[in-house]
Structure formats: structure tokens, C-alpha cells
Image (tube, rainbow, N blue to C red; front, side, top):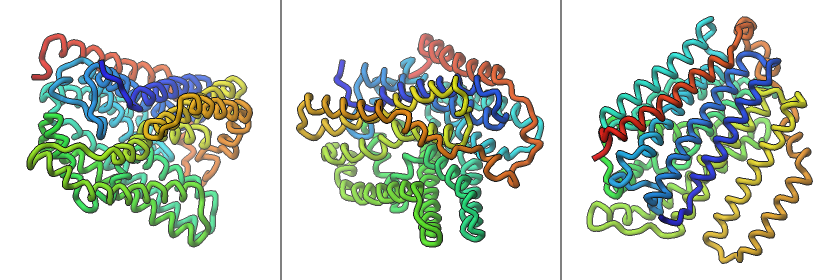
Length: 446
């Protein structure tokens, strides 16, 4: 076995706990509108699918090890295993749900009686289709599902631009809530690729793909290559749009916390692009002579930026959306205690992980790091109620914020939580069963 220094196991725990808790709270939020409950269920199942994928990845890392840079797995070792198959299939299911989310939140785009059945049928059909495609082609076309992001991405960008422009033009500050949630969803879905925006603009990401393909013995088909580049392009375009919008809004109205978050990601992407350009000689060495290792500082930078964003901060963004946009019933006493537990658990896990990352490159004794963690725990326990109250302070649904933009007829439809969970529970069981079957038959791998 190998000693693992990875955030993947932490991400698995965070996503699974948050996803299950979200579904539990949604089940006790009968007073919420059907649109809010659908959104909560989608977010909950996205987190569960991501958590299961990360769990399988953690199993692979523990059993076979991972490369130091980009947490890449050696495909010639793991290909054909149950965990490898399940990892990729669960991630495909999460992508399908993320592609459908913008059609239900912040606005229910399809104003028809059958939109919920469209969501369920497309989710199940997408899971079956991509499962079949990847298993039959030995994952040669993996990442092709990234093209599904395009429609929802255009919807989110259009919503952000419209409400930022309208807010500044009409000085209607209530519209900030809508543009912000559109931006948060873009960061939650495309946040990792936003940190590579300058590298994508400079067209140097392809060099890293070539190196990774050589190191991991990965066959890159045109569809795989196109899917990866498509998502990187969407991420780069999104952060440039968000940064431009926030600069204009900050100049006209004033800076906001979301604007600060956007500028931080933009700056991270800029520095990352310069760092990627600086190590291009090392990247090229892998297919010109022999592979050279990246500098240790480069790996640390990746851990604190791209990896931390996708593994730790994305679940926190989803949690903020759930609470601040009143998707779950935050006023119910039954839900309040569970929300408090979730918030404290998330803060403690993230804090302990950051401390471990700092300790990995700074010579800090274990006693000092333990004392620092104890101080953090004490602060969170003492200020727990205030932290939770500040998170849900001013929470309001989109319908309550901008009533003139929400069609009343869309809220009158019934939502059966049991049917929703049964469908996605069947998808989960299907992925597990098909992964076990194909691995046992020796169909997968070389």
C-alpha cells in the first residue's frame, strides 16, 4: 500500500454527507415550492454522484497510488477494475445532472407540465447511454459528455449578463441575487477549468494533455480531446465574462463579496497560466526525451488552487446556494439543527484539510497544528449559531426576490420526492451492478 496525500477521500466524505443531508432536509421541506424542491434534489444527487466517484477514486489511489501532479492514476494499472469503471460512470451521471440543472434553477425554463418527466427521463437515458458507450469502447470516448454543458452554460451566461446589465441600468439591487446565483453555479460547475483560463487562451493546455497521456498510458480519441477542450473553453469564457461583469458593476455600484471571489479566481488563473508557461520545458521533456518531475512548488500551487476549488469549495458553494436562496426550509426547527451540524462539519473538515496542506510543506510540529485545529474547533463551537445565522440571513427564494420574472403557473405543479429518489437510486444501483458485471466478465481493460 502507498501513503496517500490527497484531498479525494475528504471530498468523498464531504460530498456524500452533504448530498444525503440535503435530500433529508428536502424531504422535510413540504412548505417549499416544487421548483425549490426539484433544485434541492438535483444538487443533492449531484453531490452524491460526485461523492461516490471520489470514493472509488480514493480506493484506486490507496490501492495503486497516484502521480504527484494532477492526481492522475496509472491507467495501465487501474483499467478494468471495478473502482475505475464505477468512478467514471458516476462522474458521467453527475455531468448529466449538472447539464440539466440550469433549466430548473434559478428559473424553470421549460414552462410545461412534462418538464419534471423530461428531467427524469433525460437523466436516466443519459446515464444508460454514456454507460453503454464507455463500456463498449473501453472509455476511449470518455469526456464526450462535456458537450452536454453547452446549452445550460449559455443559459447561465445569458442570465448573468441580463441581470447584471439590468441591475446597473435600473439601479435595482434586488436583481443582484439572480446574477450572483448564476455566477455561483458557473463557478460550481466550471470552477476548476476557470483556474486554467490563461493557459487555454495561450493554447498550452494541449502540451499538458500530451504529457498526461504518455505518463498514464491513456489513448486520447478525437471525442475525448474535444470534450476536454470544450470544457476548458467554457471555463475560460465563463471567468472572462464574470470578471468583465464584476469590474463594470464594481465601477458603477460598488464591489461585492461575489466580485471579490471572481477576481480571486481570475488572478489564480492568471498566475497559473504564467506558471504553466514557465514549466513548458519540463512538460515537453516527457515526449522529447524522458519525463522530468515538476518542481515541488508547482504541485503545492495546484493543491491549494484547482484541486482545493473542485474538492472542497464547490460543495461549500452548493451549500451556500441551498441556504441563501431558501431552497430548503431554513426556518423549520426540525431542519435548523441538521443545518447547524452540516455547516460546522463542513467548516471543520475544510479547516483541518487546509492545515494538513500547510503542514505538508512547512515544518510545523504536530503539536502546533493540533493546537491550531483545537483553536479553530473552539471558535466554530462558540460562534456556531452566529455562523449559521449569517449564512441564512436574508435568505429568500428567487420567486420571492423577483416575482415579476417567475411565472406563477410553474409553481402549481406537484413534486413527488419519492419518485425522484427512486429513479436516481435505480441509476446508482445500475452503475454498481454494471461495473461489477463487466469487471467480473473481464470485458474491461487490457
